Length: 198
Image 1 (cartoon, rainbow, N blue to C red):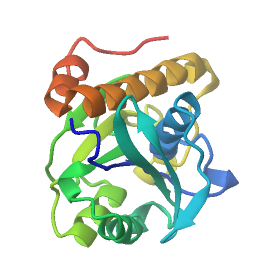
Image 2: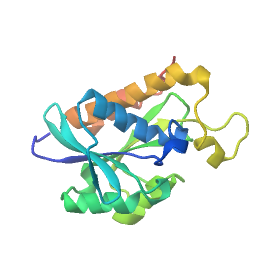
Image 3: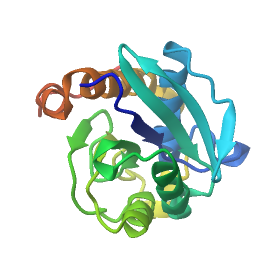
Image 4: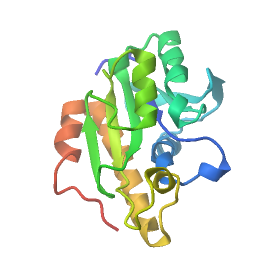
């Protein structure tokens, strides 16, 4: 991948303490571990998003967390992409997914929103779904909670170690996609047997 091609890597979530460590904030968690491991400081705010600029190997990237709440994630990202002249196909969005089992990751090159309000907002803002997604499986509620209560709930204490492994594996998936390409990432991380366990 050319070193001079700026990529936009986005973690989706909701801002504020009440939402910290909830399932819906899996994207924020991955963005945070990328920032930590690659010394990218979230030291700028622009268009209602928190930003950090840095490199993973030779890949120049803008790491972003929209602060407009999940269902309004699209407009800040569209403004960022326009400002930095990043086409949507050079954007990678990391988000939770209830239709994927907890412990699974799945990379998609493009597609629909699958009922995810953050992805729906981004598609509306960009006029389509031509961007890469990394889906973090959070599964559906075993206790029969409604979808909103489930995604805004926290992972149970007995899953804490597995959450760390999943978030680390998602970071590895992002690095693989940026440095080796989306297709390589899909081949490695979309395998049916790749269930990250504690």
